[in-house]
Length: 633
Image 1 (cartoon, one colour):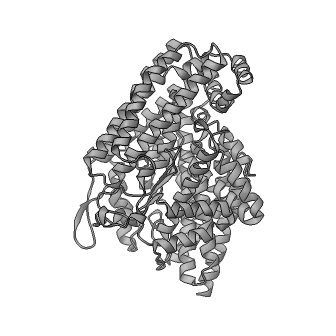
Image 2: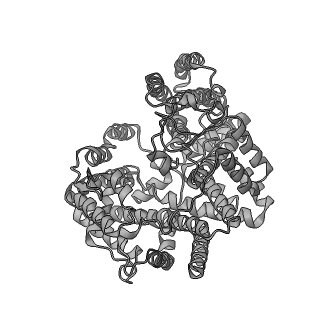
Image 3: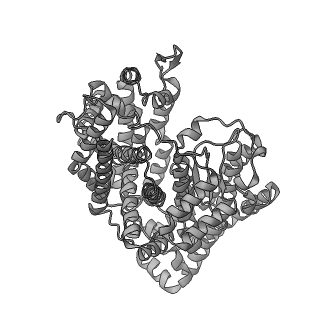
């Protein structure tokens, strides 16, 4: 069942990686404590998945023995409703066990990435996945060849098949963009080259690109790579961070032609697939994978342009808080206020989260309590442990797991709440949906997590009178709006414009890309209105952003923030009825419907401007309070 492996397995592990949340403090601090020194209650219990490695290997052997049975269904799926159901049910059971195997091996390795045994288990799982994909690869094409009228008849004839209705619809709606067997084979062969633009970009940017030497304030000389830039661009010394920006982006500017050729190759690849699949645009093709209307993308960009005065208000406030006469692009990253000293034990963090998420209802908080008490979370950093944070719901018949690197700061508490949002989404979808419908669409993946962060921040603000702490929290929230809503939409607009230019037949040189990017950057940051000075050099920033190789992905960061803000508002304003609806219609929905209808079922319509307008209302309210606090000071 290629669709389940390719999409459902992928979405599970996207939640483990792409939908994870970075933890700055945790990532930068290399813990020198070994895992055996940490109390068991702070470590996840992988025995809930398999008792031990021997049990894992026995289950893996069982899956391998099942693979030959796929052949018995090949070429027969259109014969009867029973045959189709038996094949899908068999494939679902095999895939479910495969993902459980992968979940165990991955988490075992993440406990200590230096261990070779778990690393080998991960490699074995990758090989098994290739075999499973190969054995089930006939399923999607055969379903595509079955007339829609026949599928409808099958669904009427066999009620057990109806659990696969959404899955079958998701395949069959692609029929207008599916070509003959010969063309499909050619498209498949071309797939071996499809990652080449990104591969070249990644190798050059991360390995071969010469990085300039840079002298720090203590006299130490470093190579100013991407990681160093991220660290030093927020330095409080303005002259120093200006030098960081000029040196860093000056190096990128030296290779403008090379980066331009790489990105143009990516755009041409997207256009090839747009043309061969018979879509009207590259954007339409990208969004159709999740059945997202193009209007959601274009409305987001329109909403941002209509509300640029709100961003400009924030930028003027940033200028005031930093004590500057003129705001430059290199002034975007220093903290607006000194971070307040807010420290928490694990137990205090858990209690705070329970209180903050109480509006979601007793069933919700009872499950949180179960997660805290029954070792669903691996909390503290240890030597060799994977950095960052994630939630994974891949072990369908067990419960989700969370990896953290908790250092006791407010950001760590927020990260815990964020990952618990993913966990509750996975837990409820796994509980209420059949496996085939349990993995929610990527478009929805960040909504539950950001909803939790929003509710946490609101609760802490409601219970904090200390002005410095309030300013610190409010300043962080404002930066989230700038970087997640406005900046990601800025990237989305650039991605759309360069594809539109290429689709009209225009060539994209590095210089052309820089000109397009600079025009958008100056519009967003109010250069013509005197809000921010944007030097020509920063036109090359597009070359630093890897997301332009992700096929119109970044807009979802912005839409998720808007949707989550709308959800949190409704929960706080409408009370228990909305909380029940959120739990039943959203958290428990999985992929039983498409993303847009799932959100509509809880009163959030992403095809309208309402969620965006609510986000702008919240952003302005935050700035109102910051200005009041500043005036009082």
